[in-house]
Image (cartoon, rainbow, N blue to C red):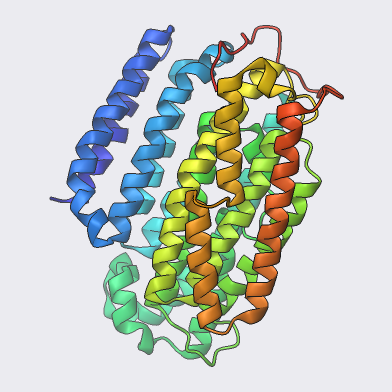
Length: 442
């Protein structure tokens, strides 16, 4: 059965969201979540065999729909906490964003991946603007400008590749990953190397790899929490694997100075180190999670840079674990900021006294993100480190393992403050008076 059926869910939701535009009430939001849940069950049946077979597309579609499911249910509570946001308009943009992620997951064509990536920028930026304050507007425009400039670089690389294969007369089918792999030797090695630089840099901007990451902390901290879950958990990982599909289809050769694996290893290692260092200095709870995303995506990029079957399998495991853990933490962070009236880590304190259930869930998520065994990320990170060691990448092992240790220390420090620390200050930005506090929701 074709995976293309998975596009039906976002299309139906778009129609439903357009129909409910102008209506209000939690009942409509629950029906939307039920629709997404039904789609998840149907699509899971379609892709289940592919997931167990290790198909990238099947794994991407399954994880994307899983996080969309959790995001849709969390949206019910988030919209209740933010009554000034129009549910109809929110779900229109949400369904379009979800659809763009499905297209990226399904895509077998580099040009189509680029178009879907650019469309995801516009739809997710529209969701950030839904917050309606000056900070969200600034974050959205920064996101649009930086991501679009980065994708223009990727487009230049795509043009170089297409120009080398235009003799086939296949129109944009020449950019199918299968055709690229079959014909890559007809692309001059200097052109391949130059195109790789542009594609890695362009799509690396959407992935949030350092030094192209400057949009990410602002956008993720200002986006609605259910959207942050999709942004961080799904879009960043899909961007890295789009780069991987290109570098596998159009290899530059081991002797190339700027080969795809080498660039991914460099950018990934720097992202892990910078992301870990930034965690120490964060005071905003959602920016903390955003910088953690930079570090986690860097680890995936390093694994993809190794390029072996085992390393790719470890990268896919890292993608799945990170998607589930990080999206859950963003949902929780959104409810905590609504409950405490602040985004400051120093203001979200004494959680273990105020809500033991919330304290347990938040602790479990942070420790999983920090890589505490036997939780998921500890397993995938160990697999990645072992692959680096086997391939004698000792410098990368030293830098990434040191950064992971620093990450554990930084996240543990912030967690202790959340659980037992006394309130020291309040964020200068507090929710408006028309936002209702969360009622026991994390």
